[in-house]
Amino acid sequence: MTEGERKLWALLRRKQLAGFRFRRQASIGPYIADFFYSRARLVVELDGEPHSDELQMRRDAARTKWLEAHGCGVIRFWNLDLFKRPDDVVDAIWNALAHPPSGPSGHLPPQGGKEGYGTPGKEG
Image (cartoon, rainbow, N blue to C red; front, side, top):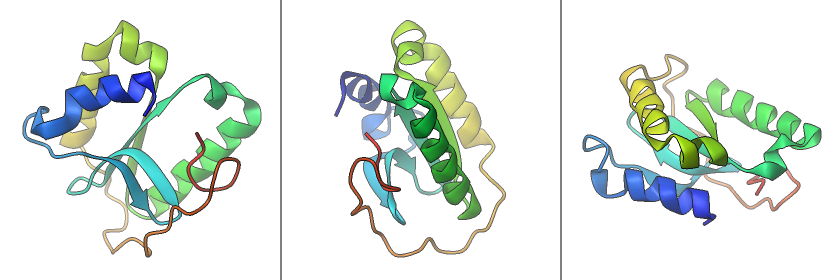
């Protein structure tokens, strides 16, 4: 995990956020989410500098679109936001949990996550 992911995991693990049990590095279809709360189908992504590249931003947008089409809500934070305003990040996650997505509620496709960096799977 990156330094940012370790910091966020310290805030989310062991049901520290009002008893919600997040998983980290969770496979969802062809992707691997940084953090995932399955009951609310909420994906939390923490992005660093590589995600500011235009190509990476397009990949992230396609990934978000796919996840949302499969009934997940997706929220993203910059590492800098987490380090400067961790309480705001936790509040935003709490708000997302209070308002889960209303998309399709069917099962997700079989777990994949086999793609590597630079492909539609987990992108750094």
